[in-house]
Image 1 (cartoon, rainbow, N blue to C red):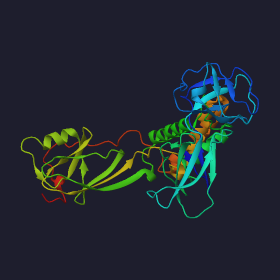
Image 2: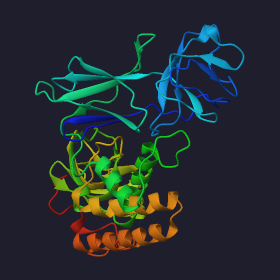
Image 3: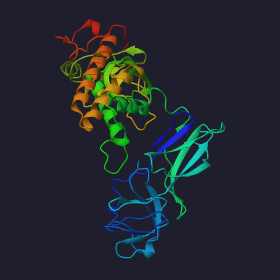
Image 4: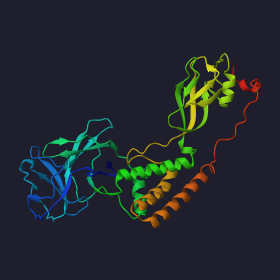
Length: 386
């Protein structure tokens, strides 16, 4: 996962939670090459290619990545490249798939990547940072690199120069973490990684959507769909949460109940330009059945976009709301219930203020519909030529 604030690109160091892990059983001095460990379970065997291990944990000042000579492994001893720092017995030793990160620039989101730089993974932090000072490239990709084996991982998602704005998921998560007096941590046993943080933000957005569906910035109008001749239904948009209206051939359809629809469609089905609809089985059934291909226009409130990465933007009115939501959940994760309760109270207060500002309190349920008592209703087809 890559983050680009301003002119710097920060790439999360490799996730080690599923990597083989053991511990030193003896102290090792600076320049040492022999690592006595508690277990070799899960590590490559003597027939494998040379591999890298992280000695220490991300964030430790003395942590470092060293290359292990697989063929020289004897018993519970790794033979590695010379250590830069000294390490003590009980320091962790973890398999890591790559030891460097490559940074690429592109002139467009689909352009050919040009290598800008290759950096050693910064094990003293949770991220490895690269600063781009040029003006040629506006789009970037990254890849982890195994220097000894000369191979790369797959590319990251495309990052552009404006990926991380004040509305970005990254900014909301960081602000929430500051309010919770904590940080996002990618160490192997972390309870608050970037993936967990984004899942938390998504939970908050879903909770906001459950409280109020008719946020004006989630309103959308879609076109491009047509009715099918002699087919009595049209598909329901997959991202719809609440329908506003349907227009067919420029005419707004009236809604009626399933009972009304059943009464009107008894016997020989009428055909023509639709005037009414009913929702059933995740479709909109039309009356009369369309006798041709008519343009369809939906207006509805959509499901908010899924938060796919740190550059996903949140609608401005919800930014402060979700900062406090994330902060409360991060505090709970860290075991600080008092802080979590205080931040959650602020979240609910801000959410209700926004609900009031954007249309007043949400109505529970759907407005009452007065069902027709007769199929002989002169107003049914007013304004529609059949």
